[in-house]
Length: 207
Ligand code: PRP
Image: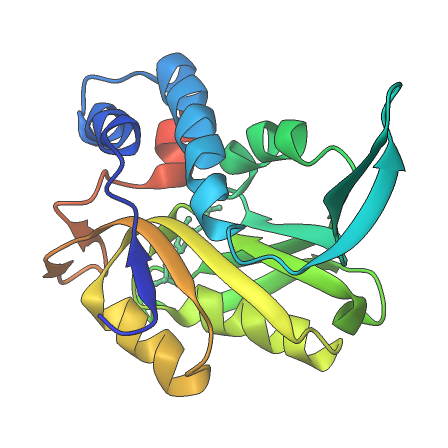
């Protein structure tokens, strides 16, 4: 699908399969989700802007590259938290914003309950993190908050995406790049991704 990068790396797919397995308990689920998030980050950050710099090694001058912009990670609560720590280990200088959204069971509407974001987001490369892209309502609501604050360079990282969610997000934000480990079949009547992995928040935290 246009605008979507499916990360087919064997380690990502191996871990995704463990996460899908209903026998995987929260303790292991947390660990594996962290591992897969770190692996996905490599792909999601591949096109970060860099600028040339020169440094002095102990022996000579060497040309190199530095990231051009600060990085802001934005996990969508709760499940996005499961991908945060391992990504932060790879980009320790990143700042972290939070968006809390809860999908209403009946309407599937994403209801905001928390927002903590820096101002002037245009200066950041923003990575919006949520394991699941189902109807896409949460991702669009999160993007609305980020856009209001001026974010211009955002990448959305989802472990699993439903075609319905991708279409919904790209209707509202046609240029938003989406990185995922899988585009699943479809949503069921309750708005769960099939085959998916169940409720990511529940699988992570056991409630
Ligand atoms: C789940 C999931 C995503 C959202 C995806 O979270 O973690 O955030 O639903 O659904 P959507 O694309 O249809 O909006 P939920 O709202 O259940 O909250 P939780 O993470 O606290 O469990």
